[in-house]
Amino acid sequence: MILLRRLNGSELGVNADLIERLEVTPDTVVTLVDGTKYVVADSVEEVIERIIAFRARILAMAEAIERDPTGAAVSPLRLVVEPVEEN
Image (cartoon, rainbow, N blue to C red):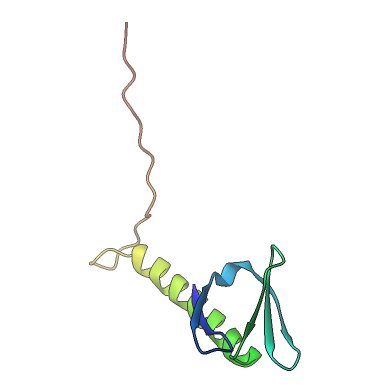
């Protein structure tokens, strides 16, 4: 999520992955993939910077998950196999 400011100054959390496009009309209009539109006080450049920072944080967190304290690579996912009962 990224935080944006509405024209009245209140904050709005938006899922950055659902942003389809940004427009300047002269206010910034954020359009989501479902067609929902938000008019915000932030400039297009500020919104783009927040999206980039959001995605960078996700990548940094994913990198941290893939390393254990010794620095060895670790997969955050593992296969769980349940024992098969024999008749």
